[in-house]
Length: 146
Image (cartoon, rainbow, N blue to C red):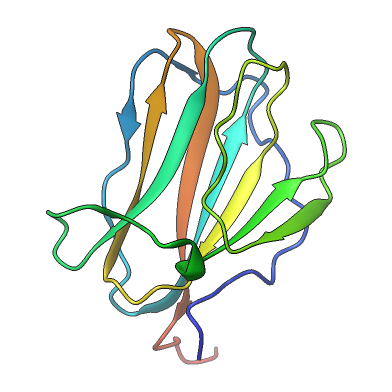
């Protein structure tokens, strides 16, 4: 079974105003032990300057980060800032989000075999509006039905 949870519908910005990020950000490692999939949602807001470069990283031991190969990712982006229909982009890291106005949301599935993943984002501005959420999915052991 592939490590993929791309069977999700449209995705929307959940926050009226995403947090204002003023420096490079690195998420905690997410342990995929016990799961067959992961999804990274990048929610971007409107801003006027700078570039945000998100990179998904993986590791066997949560200490040595490596950029995930594009073959181990399945990327989707929203059609536009107002049309949240997902567009399948194939195997890709999320692209840099630049100061071209309203940024587009991203959803990227991790289908690699490493135990840990995280998001590392670099910012060339002092006011980038974005947030990210990482979901582990497809638990290998499901709870019994009630």
